[in-house]
Length: 246
Image (cartoon, rainbow, N blue to C red; front, side):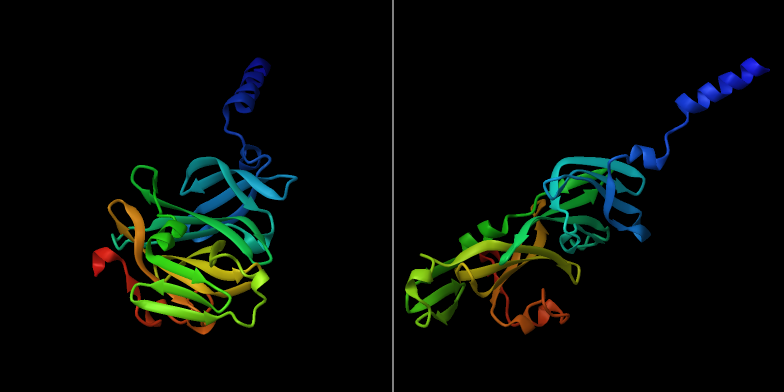
């Protein structure tokens, strides 16, 4: 009998699955959607970054060792689980903040479909979209942005010319959101290291097995910007369509 009890104890110790706390040793929860059974874990490093991510998605575990996110809770990763391509199924969207500071916010986005596992879907780079669709010019007199058949002018005469960039800059602020079931990104535009003149706002659509730009607009009024206002983005003026939609 004593030998039998010992065998049982040995079986429990070596065979029974370890507790959740044990399997998550070294990890901490960085964000979650409890109602959807989605939890994102990561390891907090001394360099102020979360690394070595682990995603628990409805009972399945996926490792993302090369993801990074700052540990400042203000810029914690965001999880969205919504149908953003109108196929009747929800997609998993995760945004990570790789860096932040005065006039800086560097985010990246990951989108997944689910078919017998999470399948990564490509999202077109917003800077590439802007470079393909926008023309800019900056002089000591004005900043000029040409988007489709629209031209936006910003007077720069009051700014010390030595402070101006050679051309308009964009990319120091890249901010992704899901708004009204649309994947969108805000890319701020600046003419000096400290002066921003507006935002490009890109709305994505699922096309040719990836997320590409459906519309892009330049917004100078924060009250009309969907990233700052609860008003639905479809109310903001006419969107500038891509060439294939003209």
